[in-house]
Length: 416
Image (cartoon, rainbow, N blue to C red; front, side, top):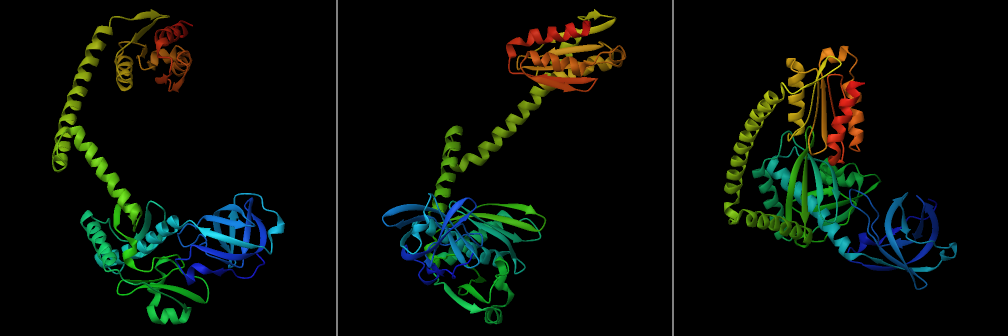
């Protein structure tokens, strides 16, 4: 991009929400019209932080600025409408979406606080493997040789909030690379190697220091509460911490409180009784499920016995066909038990949920029965499809009221 380097106002005054600039050019990128100014207060995407958004006004016409990006030290402002080349040389007024900016800045400073807390709780081997700031939550990937326990997570959250309450002034300065490395060492590059001869160092005295180009609040107290939402293992040796800061943390807390309240209301117990009540209900449900499975097995055996002599002989093959009140797995078990035991050569079974199953013995296969084709055609009657092996096939369809017709279709196919 052949323009002079854009003057970045947000580094000079974080709290500048509006600015005036000159339009240096209009370029097209990714199908968008992009404005180039001599200076800007819009932060361009980078370092795991999304760009600012807002609006720009040229000659009284307001355009939405939906994305800013930096290319070769020049900031491109993507706008939402067609703009003619005659804007070049004109004055522009820009206005940053301040609520979004503050939310992202809180999360970015919060990221540094959580990393510092993690290093203190888990050990100095902790190293940042990546991060992403958002509006409702942020995430940090940290190198760590084992899963972070809930107790450790609680300690990290508590310590990060202590840093917030200390209301520490951030010390943010530009240094030459050599000077920065001499002062702070390679711990600067927690977020990755920063390009360029000059490095912007974000220091939270007594807590953390990193080379970082993102926007930050000027005192830790502005971050507001920090709430860790969850942690997960994203790959071997890398733990991800998901957290929210500021008003986003309040929203997350209120969401969790609502879930707890709704769950307690369902069980009609106080919140502190909820874990014990859930454990009891789960234990009872598991015991009843095991009993139901046992009874289903007995019912299946009884059904098999009642059907054993109720077969139709077709072309020398014993064929059993039935509409049964049984689930999909039961249908499969009953059908294969019949063919495996020699009680039938072909079994066609369906239920009122639109599931149909077919099984064939080796004798039936030797006689040319292709049960997978039979079930595929029968399932078509149900408005669905199916298939499988020569010994066992299954199908399903949404027209459950046509199950009798589907079973009869299968039987007719067996007759040939």
